[in-house]
Image (cartoon, rainbow, N blue to C red; front, side):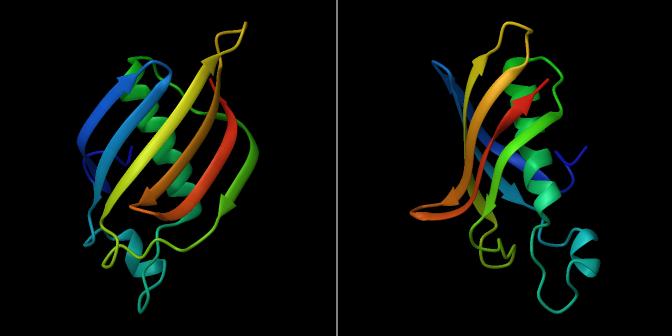
Length: 120
């Protein structure tokens, strides 16, 4: 689990079928010593895990990544430069109870990550 250690949630609300979250990255987290020591960036797998954890918290049901239809890493997230991020997760519930999601991570107008897939 990354929440509480790798990142903290400053604000979260669910409006209709969209989860709006504001998170703060822990720029001192040990993961950046290996990814990468002289130019730390947020690993892609951590971005996908952030989406799952924020969805779990917002909806009160544990979910994990089931399928990634599209994951676009547009610009590296450099924690020292971009510690405060906005995460938007649009979701619809499938017949089997899984969630079809369309999500993004950004700071202001800068879009870092776009994701489409299924959480279950």
